[in-house]
Image 1 (cartoon, rainbow, N blue to C red):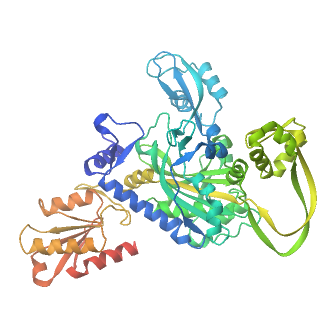
Image 2 (spheres, one colour; image 1 turned 90 degrees about the horizontal axis):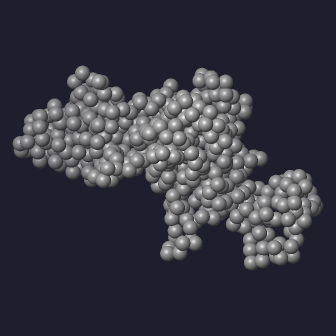
Length: 569
């Protein structure tokens, strides 16, 4: 039986130190992987490249912060994750195995099930008699399973917290502080990379779906009325988009469109969403992904996260798994900031000054503090703040529906305790809640994608054609034979490279051909060989991994030459 490309990549990764299952000596844990010496280096280079594209190339409007993994429960109540960050699970009544219900239905019935409600999944399971794949038992207890990892802060059980499933909420809760530090200017991108955890029900596809991984995200805040015009020309190219409308018709043919045109035709709802999709396309190209192997697939409404008005998954085609998501691009509107204002009682609005003051009619919420105080007692001030900072239009809509209660920030408030009034005010500017678009990447998944794209088999060798910027080692240094003065000169070149902060390997064991093969297999783009001519004229042989081309340069020029190649590529 022939071994497929993916299995060969996994074998190489295990042998040469890119990645392997975590806690392997105890049998491993599904959804957890270690990055070995080469994988850890490669991931760091990918992270640095992401920072280059999403932060350093946008220093005029993007900054980085760092926030904790451990997050108080109230944050995820506000964000909606406690109620909405769920997947459906079903249990076998005979053997007790638990399955992710939509995945099980897809595997057994070969139909699309992502985004179906619990009732719809139950109907499919019962009508099609879907049973446990392991024992044939009847499936029962279909329910929503929350993917947050729960913990406690300190020794008190009531101090419930969760490990963050995304870096976003730390950036939302720190928005006002960051905005003030950065001279109160919009648009403003807040970027963060760090560890996140998702209690996946049944992780599969190896490094594609993990329970813990490194996320790389930008929350990009802008004025929804005056968002500004992105400079699309900074990143050349068109977007290949598979629209939701097309997917509804079982169409798999994407459209190819300029980002400006995509916004104009309302294919993409926001100019900044289109812009960061364009940046993402340029970024993955640097990882060795061809443009014809990238498509942006619009999520259907039932597939979107609870906070998103429009979402595109950036898909890349790889061996074994086909089209896989490498990044998500969501238009989160003002959902998160509005919710955090409601739950925290803090003002997260932005003030934009008018050229001249003017009189306007504004709607305001008036709260009957006596009723609130009587009903909510010590929580009265918290409830009043929640109402004051809530969306006036949403409260007005709830009151128009003649409901007896209005739910704000999780509190059910009697309608008679709230009133909407119109007042005339002379104002010098307007307050608004910024809208947000979010590009989000998983670093470990990109490691696998880059390895898949780089893996090459030829008649006489197997090698990784990794782009030099993300190759774990940039240079290999070899003495032709283990004799002096060749060894001393080779070791000096190695030390010079180390001092120059280049990642470099030194190898003097085995034939020179075997050493080239070992370096090629782990993707080292350049090799330097010190031979007898080196002693005579102080030159060394440079060998290029991809073409096996060789030429000579001065030994003292090696560091500068390698640096120049890395800057150029």
